[in-house]
Image (cartoon, rainbow, N blue to C red; front, side, top):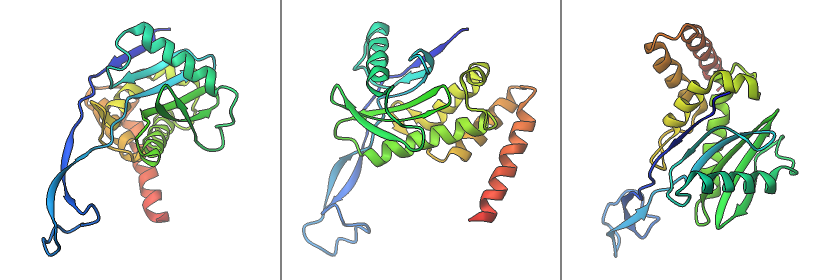
Length: 210
């Protein structure tokens, strides 16, 4: 079984904010009010491992692990640290090597999202949930290793839609899955049309329920 890995370079991107930070409208009606630099949240890696800690699909956005050996060692450490925890009903959080890791287990698949120790845990949890929801849709609720390996191309496209260079692009699982299905249809994949149809039905029901 061929396992795939993609790597990326994490570049810190800043955005203009205001001071005091609670100022939302930047009306300049209070003093002081000045432009400041606020760091955007960044993701260091997203990992999908099997029940033995082996790679299914991983993507790194940080140079913190410069070699493949370093990446494999980190994956082994994170799997060893979390394998005996109960992260099947809801996501769990742990610290490892000055990083915050949010993770969740389903069947024989382990989902992980890593950020720095100063990162917002809720943002990491939102990214994790978006990844899990998108994979669930793309695998038609059959979230297990064999199905994931047979659809690695969809999962890797899914990662591309969630994070780019460490910067979060999208966290809504249905939107992510829809983009992946549309992209895959453009490539002429035989199951894409049916998959896209199912995602649209899901979105329609979700809209009615909300």
